[in-house]
Image (cartoon, rainbow, N blue to C red; front, side, top):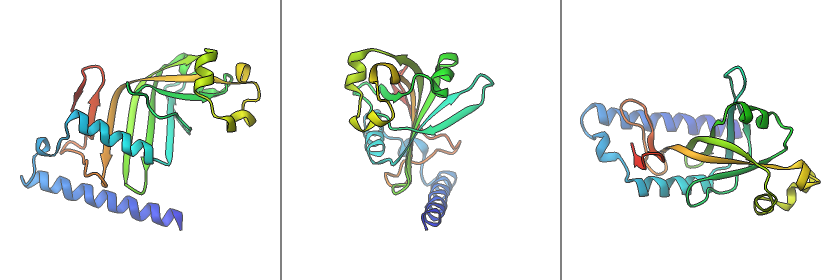
Length: 187
């Protein structure tokens, strides 16, 4: 039942996206008319992130192959830095040590919306930060927070958003609306 819903939702998402592209192609709507301001795009991204029930960290291995796993990131801070917790002996830790380029991906199937944040990850083993970014329910996974738990700090570089619910669609080149944290601009 759940897979049928997701297939149907995905089909609707594609149809609505194609309809929007058709409007672009017919001249009924220009991409610049549909672009949100940076503030509006970032506001919509926060709403989507808060409602997302699928949150994924994507790292790159030593062979350049991506690896994705569902995680439980903390809500992005005001500067959009994202914190995640893991075991210091996990595969993702080794991958981040070799290549700090990561993506944190949030998907809300009900709103047919996603936010993708590409950035640089670094490992943080600071006791105060580990206490701040901790959930008591994790004690089962990390019995000794000092030794069994480490943080991943992701500093954002580019955020991308697409949403049927909030009518944030791709442009004619299929590029989603984005925000570049380095230049501090929407695209």
